[in-house]
Length: 199
Image 1 (cartoon, helix red, strand yellow):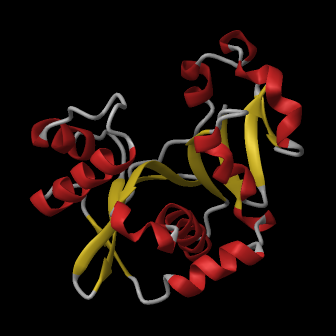
Image 2 (spheres, rainbow, N blue to C red; image 1 turned 180 degrees about the vertical axis):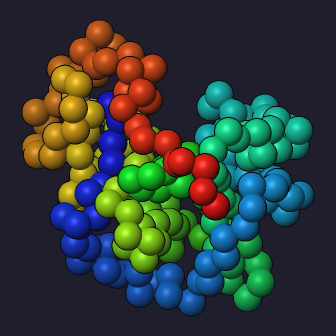
């Protein structure tokens, strides 16, 4: 199911506030969607450390560059650094009604910082700064241990039955793992407002 955070309904949990404190030394930089060797090296570290058998495990530099650069809408690479060393990156699309986190990756050696959570928290901050109401997180899969962290964000909504609804109790969605229980991805994407071309 597609998932997004309604930033007006978000307030951080105790553990999310701890993540913010642990990562306050990181600096953020937004760049144009142009792939670099440094980003690809970090991307490889992330895949090798966290998703070595996943569908993107064999992605080379050219495929990575295509993922980053071949975009029909306004996109940015949000980089996070520590003492000028790249620690995390998120490819982010800027929509009329929010930020869409297309793909994020980080240095697995710094897992103690909870960088995945931090990137989402920072995107909520960016959305507030830009006056955008939502942060789109991609998919949330009920019952998936890898997706549990998304359900921990207050204000999470899921796309179901043709509309967005507050998540509520994640356990109530167990039947939703069936592929025929959700709208096809094309119909879900059609509901997203794309930017009007302004930069």
